[in-house]
Image (tube, rainbow, N blue to C red; front, side, top):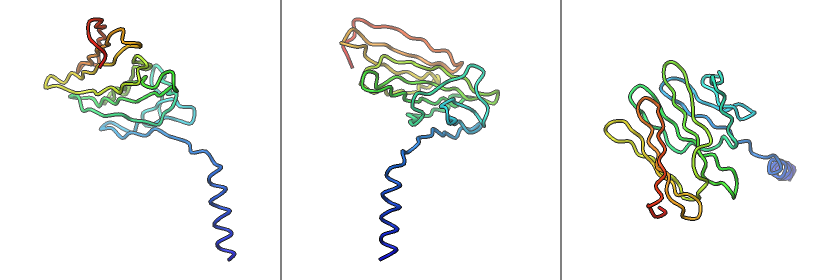
Length: 153
């Protein structure tokens, strides 16, 4: 009886403790993780240009792109902006990233890598105004093109 009561108290108490999400992603070059303040780090060291993650809890996909690991992180910023994202490039020399990308569309992006190691993905703009097309090449260069003739995805 005492064990059952103690177990019930522990379970009820644990339900009151909020879960703290922590983004952790192993790469070929070290461990990518967010600290308690949501600042992204590689092996415990912040990036040269800090990246602060709103909600460091979701890795979308990781690509191996020649001598780099490229990680897409979804940055769900609530109902009004469900699909912002960041891209982090990790190499032997360290890590750098691009933050706050995307159009806030609720349509999920689907990045794909081609034989030339270019990662491509698209995302519709708000209210069907067009589509943003992204290309992230093997040198870590992002190209964004707005296509107003394309229907929403």
